[in-house]
Amino acid sequence: MMPRAQLLLLQILVAIIGLVAWYVFATVPIFGVILLPPFFFSNPVDVAKQIVDWFVSGVIWKHLWVTLEESILAFVIGSLGGVGIGFWFARQPRTAAVFDPYVKMVNALPRVVLAPIFTLWLGLGIWSKVALGVTLVFFIVFFNVYQGVKEVSPTVLANARMLGMNERQLMRHVYWPSALSWMFSSLHTSVGFAVVGAVVGEYLGSAAGLGYLIQQAEGVFDVAGVFAGMFVLAAFVIVIDTVVSLIEKRLLVWRPAVGEARP
Amino acid sequence: MALGDVVVAFRLTGGGVYTAVERASLRVADGEFVAIVGPTGCGKSTLLNIAAGLLAPVAGRVDIFGAPLAALNRQAGYLFQADALFPWKTALENVAIGLETAGIAASEARPYAQDWLKRVGLGDFDDRYPHMLSGGQRKRVGLAQVLIRDPKILLMDEPFGPLDAQTRQIMGNLLLDLWSADRKAVLFVTHDLEEAIALSDRVVIMSAGPAAHIIGDWQVPLKRPRDISEVKLDAAFHELHREIWHRLKAEVVKGYALTEGA
Image (tube, rainbow over the protein chains, first blue to last red):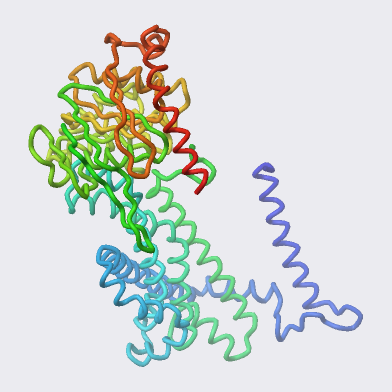
């Protein structure tokens, strides 16, 4: 491993090279041709101006807040549903078997096609976006919790029973922690999908949010605006991801880090 | 504790029935330490699961203190071969849980658990999670987890199997030490004849499976308290080892022929 400072320096260097190349190819003609026509690619300076403008004028906060709100609601509702149904199906194999083909069918459906229906049912407000996010988050959590309950080590289970646990205690001390650990291990994916659901929903029809911002810019061929929206969105997701990492670290202290497990 | 003419059979996927254990009878007296030795795959663990009530025999009887066993054996503690600690609980919580399931409040169970951790030599490891402990340490926690419930019967399924030779000796001495305090009835399954003789009062030999049954029963004439490394230098130890091994060898060869041929 290289030292941290050096690594950081190289990482920043990559960004600088990328931005400079973008700027040069978008503004300086090479053999009489501009390789990245500004109409399609804008340039880093304009994009930066747009971002600064959003933050200075403060318009961006409202959109960020809406997207965050939708993402959180989608995550919470999808997770609750996934945990509940995942638990239920794992403990009731017969129910699970009956619903199995339908679960597979709905999961196989590309969720984007549901967006218009949700807009129709729930209107242009945040709930149609939340619904889209829920359909994405639900299945990730559902499958993980289902797996978590199913894959409790038979030895641990036998041990729990020999230690005198009744059905309720098994639930609390064995199935529940196992299911939660599986759910938390997919936290990054499910949170990511909550954001995807929110943004795609906004993009397809809304009055606020990052997806709306990008869609608006695109509508008037404001490429700088589109890129600016993308950068803000990327930063937004990175911040959320970092928060998730912190939460994960606290919740899964009992789990060995990769490569740390003892034989 | 008595197993009478126990038969265990499993339905195979794709039809057919596999008889794991055929008419095995075994009696373990109060306070007696009995070791079961046999070739791999002979159904030693199956017999333990029967005694624990985790498995029901197809035929035969299981009596615990004179009463037939119908469900889980509430009088027994079981130390498993594989890791059986709850990975999401600390060492202390793992030990305390056996009392909590019996309705004792966590705040009351913790000091007992701490005491038991100290008795197995892990007094300072109470806040460690199982993955932070070595294999031997995990076995110690497992031992404390089982013993804190003060079971009348102790069932052990190759508990020290995955450990290295030195750790096994240390664990063996620890076990004898703890056991000698209140002499529970112990049924100890192992494939290691030396370990069996060194620890127990009686060694029982099982034949190779399928349809494994009990083919030999020896008293161990060694005095207690014992030290495992010392007892192995005793002439009586060698005498008995030679005698039992003579009988066991044929079964081990048979067992290998079966598993290797499969």
